[in-house]
Each structure stands twice: as C-alpha cells, then as structure tokens.
Length: 389
Image (cartoon, rainbow, N blue to C red; front, side, top):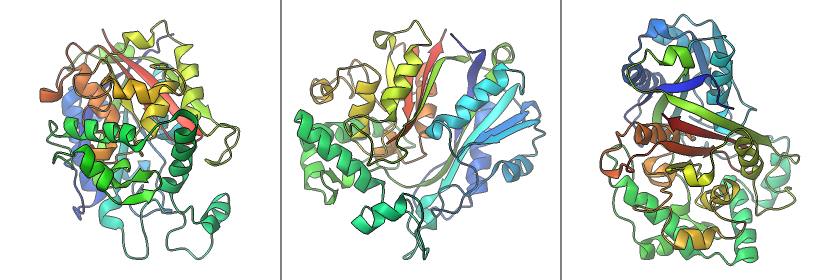
C-alpha cells in the first residue's frame, strides 16, 4: 500500500577527507541545496529527523542533534525525531514518512552529518567500539577480546562463511568495488575517482580476510539532507515528487552480528520480505538500486535479500555484469560508499533520487522510474521502494 508521503528534495554538501570544516556548516550547505531542490523555504519545514541523534561513541560519527540544527537553520518545527534503534540508517526517512502520512508534519527535513575523517586522532578512531575509553560494555566486551575490533572484522566473518558456502571469491567482490569506482568517475562529488583495476583491488592490503582495503567504505566529512513531504503538499513542490511506494524494516532476534543463525543472511532479508508484501511491484520493475555498502560483501547480501537473484547466486549475477555500468540493475551509480564516501546510506538515497529525477549526468540510467533502496548491515535493516509517476 503506497504511503501518502514522498521525497521532494535532496541536498548534499561539498564532501571530502579532512576538511576540518565544522559539521554544522556542512549541514547548512546541504539543507540550503535540499530546500532549493524542493522549491521550499525554511518556513515550510515543520518537522526534523535524524539518525542516530547526537552521540560521542565514535569521533565525528554523529556530532549534531535535532535541536542545534533546528536552531542553526532557524526552523519552526512542531515534530522531531532522533532514532538510534530504528531500521538502521533509513530510520529517519521512514519515521518522517509516517509523520507526514498521519498529519504530524507537512515537510520534514531529514539529515545526516559526519566529520569522521577530520575527527580521528591517534587514540580515537572512527568506527572502533569504545575508542579511547577505559571500559567496554554489552556485546562489544565479548568481541573486542577476540580482536574483533570493528565492523570490518564482523563483516569479514560473514564474508568468510559466504565464500565457504557458495564459492564466492575475492574476484567477485572486486567486480563490486571496481564497478562502483567506474560509476564514481562520472560523479564530481565522489571522493575516490581515479580508475581502479581488478589487479589493484587484489593487490591492496588485507583488512579482515577476505576483505581488503577497497572492500571498505571511505570515512569523510560531509552532510546530506532529504526532505519528506505529505503527498498533497508535495504537489506544490518544484519537481515531481518521488512517491514512497513501500517500506520494510527488520531487527534480528539475536542483536549481534556474530550470533545470527545463518551468517549468509542479514537483517536485509527480513526487511526486504516485509517491503515486498506492501506493494504490487516486483524486482523486475526496478530500474536502479541503492544498496548499503559499508563493505562490499553487503551488496551480494542485499541483492539476494531483495530477490534479484536466489540465495547463493549473487556471485554469478554480479559476474554477468548486471550491477555495473550498462548493467540491467545498476547498483550505487554515484560510486556508493566504497568510492563516493560514507554518509551512512544518505548519499545512496540522494543518488537514487537524482536518478529518478533524471539529473545524474553521465551516469544517468535511461528513463529510471523505480529505485530500490536498502540500508544496514548485520542484524538491523531498512528498505524502501521509490517511484516517479
């Protein structure tokens, strides 16, 4: 069932590595561009939403909360949300859609801002549990003694199991990384735009076997804003609204990466199954995909979860050229997080919207009308179908 909600504007700041620019300046730039995209002013915005809310558990990972962004932009909002435990990085978009569909707000500004590149120091590293702290709690306290210090280790376990079960090789994952780099070369905003050959991919240093350097996303400084509007309000915006056709979410029964019963699946599988129940569209109707690629191994998991190929068949689906430039189901056409830079899924959604509006320049997918988006790794996930009428 289609929600009475649509995406009406997106904006991304200039992004980069070690910009040493305050997060609020990145955010203000992204917000201005999103408002211009939608043909709205700050006075039209009456809701604000983010993931995960202001946090200091990892340097630069989430330096801004809803309150300071609201005040800095001069917004007069009547609804707000910061969602650390929702359906992954897609949570602020999904709760915003529900807010406008139920009349809590008319136009919600959803944002993600990071300064992970500039904020790292010798003693505090981004994406390392408890970096710089004396004590650890929860499931981290079980993983860190085993030298599983970051998500690269946890994703490495999954990749190793998937390789063992289905015969995937590093060459298959290399096609993911090199394909997204080829897309990035057509995206002026991407941080990694030099060509990447399969030999360079295979020769790069190992991070957590079988994952190497180019299997990992790139920490950056930047911000992205997505405006979600009520369906009737969206009609008055500057460009054709992108209807949120369906959404799905998942939270695994084992809330850790390492204890899932089947390590060759993720929360993505549960989220996608939930989403497809809510629409008459099928995978064959999709024109492009925006799939969370914190690590390259997530892309085949999401392909299988969304039904573009069967369980264990992603390696052949990728090898046949389906997901790269010129493929039937192009994935992460802006370069993804592997080459475009890590905006925790918001950059992927930004690219999907630009594709559906026909404004992706040299990487444009011809007549793209439907996009499938999946965010999250491990046990938690959110998925969404967007449609341009």
